[in-house]
Image (cartoon, rainbow, N blue to C red; front, top):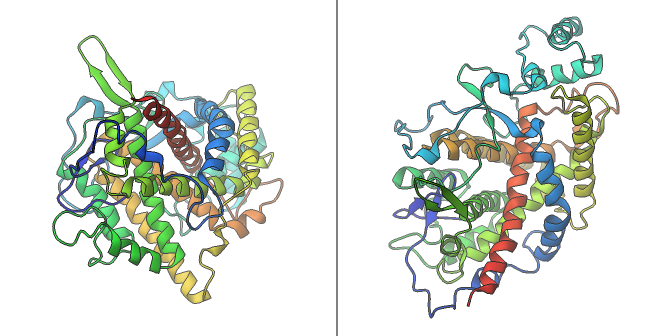
Length: 464
C-alpha cells in the first residue's frame, strides 16, 4: 500500500496513510465500493477471497483468538528503548495512548521467566547443557528432563543467518515483558511527518523499487494513477512482486485494526473505542483511493495465505512430545498445546494453499543471491521499527514484522523441518519462544483483519 512524498501518515498503529482529498460523489455512493473488486481469484495464487473468508471467520479465527488469550502467548518480551539506527531524530510521541505499560516481573508466569534464563555462551557441548538443565531444574523442580532440554533449546538459539528479522537482545536491561492483552493495538493519535517517514523508508528503500518508478498516489508530477508502477511490478520476478505485496498487506492490516478500534469518544468519564467507517473508507474506498483500496485489501489476503502456509509447514516442529508451551501450569499448558495443534492441523487442511515452490526456483546461483537480498531487505524493515516514535505502535510493529519474518524463515526451511526427529531436540531447525509468540500473534492480527472486513462490509451494506 504505497504513499508518496507530501502525504501525511495518520495514526493507525505504526502510522496510517492520509490519502488526498478526492470527491466522494453523491451521498451513499461510497458505501459499497470498498469491496466491489475484492472478490474472486487472487493474483499469483490459486485461492479466492471467499474461500479465505469462510475458512478464517468461522473455523480458524475463534480458535486462534482463544489461544492468544493464554499466558504463553500474551507475554512478549521487547526492548522499546533501542535507538533508531537510520536517522538521529529520536523524538517520541507524547500522546498518552502511545504509552506501553510493561509487566512487573512477578506478574509474568514462572515458567516463562525461567525459559528466558541466559545460558553461558561457552555452553557448547552436551555436558554443559546438562549442567544448565540442572540449574534450570533448580528454578522449578517440576521440570522434566525433556522440558529442561526444550527450555535450553529456546535459549540456545540466537539470531542467525536464517533469520529475517533484527532480533531484540531480550537479555538487555532495557528489555521488558509486555502483556499484549493490556496493550492492544488501536488508534493512538500518532501522525505527521515522523510517522510518514517510517512507511516511506519501508517502501522506497526496501521494496526493490527503482527511484524513477513513482508509487501510486504520489503527489505532484509523475502521478499517472499507478500505471507506471503496476507495469513495473508486473514485469519483476514473482519474489520481488510478493515482497511488495507482503508489505502492502501488512500496512493494510494495520490500517484495518485501528480503523476497527478507533477512539470514538474521549471524555473525563470514559473512552469509547469502535469501528470508524469514515477512516476505513479513506483508506480502502475505490474512488477516494483512485483504485488503490481494493488492491490493498487483496494484498492483505495474499499476506494471510503466506502466513497460513507457514503454519501448515511448521506442524512437525510443534507435534514433537518434547515441545511444550511451558508456563508452569501443567494442565493448562497441555490444554493449550492441544489447541495449538488443532489450529495447525486446521491450517494444514486449508484446500487452496499458496504454492511457495515458485519462489527462488530459477537459476540456482541467482536464486541464492535473490533469497539473500529478500532476507536482508526484510531484516532492514525490522530495524526501521526502532524508529517509530509511538511506543505502542513500535511494540506492535516489531511483533508483526518478527512474526512475518518467522513465517518466511519457516517457508525457506522446509528441508530442515522435514528432517526434525520425532523425539529429542531439533538442532537443524529451531524457533525461540520470542519467534513463536510473534508468529502466532502476527497471524492473529491478520486473521482479525479479515474478520473485521466482514464487520465493515456489514456496516456499509446497512448504511442508507
